[in-house]
View 1: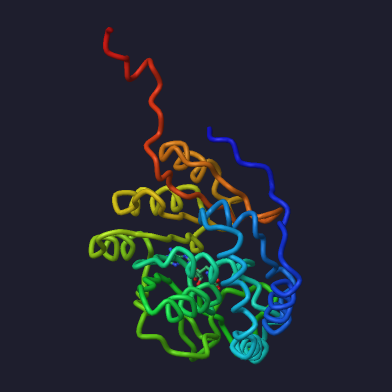
View 2 (view 1 turned 90 degrees about the vertical axis):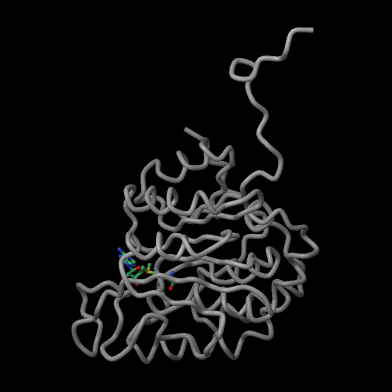
Length: 272
Ligand SMILES: C[S@@+](CC[C@H](N)C(=O)[O-])C[C@H]1O[C@@H](n2cnc3c(N)ncnc32)[C@H](O)[C@@H]1O
């Protein structure tokens, strides 16, 4: 099994960038949305300088974050309670400049919104999202209902306060929708698993996207405390190192850009 790298500390954000992140986080209304620079560096391969540059842009996103927060409050949620790393999704998308981002699991649209904001800023790329919505029973979220459920009359991505022509949203089970989407793509530059968190489903999704990955593709999965060995096994097969985001269960890897060195046993040197 591939070993998981020790939890990195947040790294060194400059004072200015720290202030921009704090403002965006306050506007979004969730203290978990901190930024882990070391994790970003490991998963993207980008320089500190470039990452700090794009993180500085978060300042300008505060009004959108406020509106996302307002919509969650109106939908009966104290905060967005889903993916804890929206600003990292923004930064990764900015620095990787992907043509194709694929995500499974949309719910109110926190991750989708941040992928789209970055793609719009890049003026390049498409987000392909797949969601099988969980429906909220009544107008108020009941105690026994998951906060990912969608209030009556609303749809996947209901808290996203803007429309983007870069969004290709598919409603349905990822087991059937993901292969359909992947088939149409020439490559996948960035993938996020955030739907059904079982080992079998994560393994299936990773096997489905695998033929379209390339050196430098970034692959992320949230809630890996529920998905057993699926992610580390995939990482081992891809000769990639798994990086965990702080103490959360969001993990990521970047496919090596150089071919892995083969062991002498499987690749004997020709006799001199
Ligand atoms: C944790 S939420 C996604 C959170 C989202 N990434 C965000 O940042 O706000 C999981 C979503 O996956 C959906 N889902 C559950 N099972 C699914 C399946 N089999 N196929 C596709 N989506 C599924 C849920 O209904 C929910 O909308």
